Image 1 (cartoon, helix red, strand yellow):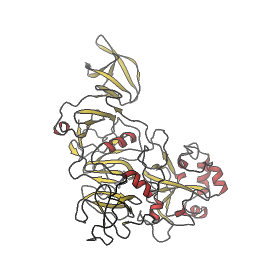
Image 2 (cartoon, rainbow, N blue to C red; image 1 turned 60 degrees about the vertical axis):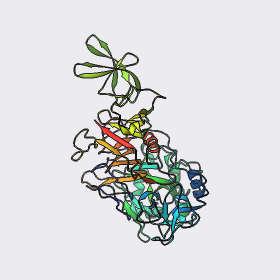
Image 3 (cartoon, one colour; image 1 turned 90 degrees about the horizontal axis):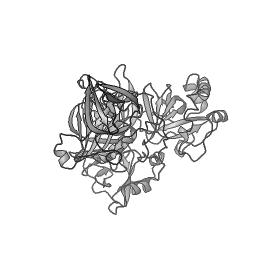
Image 4 (tube, rainbow, N blue to C red; image 1 turned 90 degrees about the vertical axis):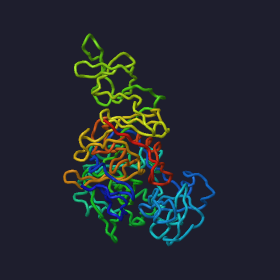
Length: 525
């Protein structure tokens, strides 16, 4: 099975069972990656912010007199090297459209036609045609002015494919769309009246817009065009060819597939129909997508919200119990994902283990995961490192600052539990260090019966070959094993953990690589 691929040019840095989406990302979960699901909890999600490129770079990285100029990324991924040399280790990368503070002039031109520029806060970028430029007024910077929003739950807006459709290289006219999409008028009539159609999260695709939202039916009937960015006006194609799919003036460059998810930076209306703009500047009709809000679950801060020991309720239908004689008797329901203080006492009744709550009740361990201070602390803990403990049996993740637990949450590990990860969809056990982090990256599978592609999965942290910690925008089953080997987190948890572990990803970089100092991830039974 192959892991993640993109059709555009990629540079292979590692070859480990699977392919790479990013320059140094093993984009997959062992030999497989989690399939798409349409399950998602409701919660308000804002569109990424539109930001002025140069002011954003200065604000994010801080004003530094060493970097009075700017460099803009033109290629999908632009390497950041430790030294001004192609042979120097790569320590991170910029995504297309990113603008970073840089030195006033090149430090050398050896091996780089436009010269190597020092960038903030560290490293060097090669400025050359179609890779990077010192001209931040270039069209691709304008087109990608909506950068990943790291203040929001998700860095982008997401949608899952619910009906196949063409992927366009530009905004089509209605006549062109009708030619490319079978029975378009019939499809639109159904979508406009269906409960899960135009009225489902009706404002989702217009959030962040300056113009007030307009009813989808009124738009369709008016045949109006509105909210079209300048770079897409007058049948224009996007600057650059980030997807690698655009050939000449060809309108249809691909087709969306079942179990495919997209990330979007903007939407626009062409002749009454709204289209979403992908992160690589292609165009998909929103009426073929299911808008995704993502789970609103998040873990708990220790000890501010609750102190150890405590239980996280990981399943629906959990109960509290009282011990009456030699039997446990149900006394009431317990909410899924509740955090409940424990006394530390345990009781085995029959073949079941129960935990005593601070309120004198008992919780069955089949639905409650006990979170306590890890007993077998090792060198990295005593050295004061930030590190992560993951329990497969409990489906929990606990973040530690040295010897102190500071955050705990429910996760979804490999669906095969404690089986052999070489043969099944289970998570690898052991002690590892995070070696690569990505604000987003794409995961996909071409295995027969498991085909899917999930674009721009947020907050990805690789710790062993294709195994990663990452947000899951396609399900809300945290506390239950369901991944293909990766460790799935709710979006808010993934975002918090991403900012807490090493290596840090400097703004506005899109990824960072750890030479030897990544945070420890300890996965055990």
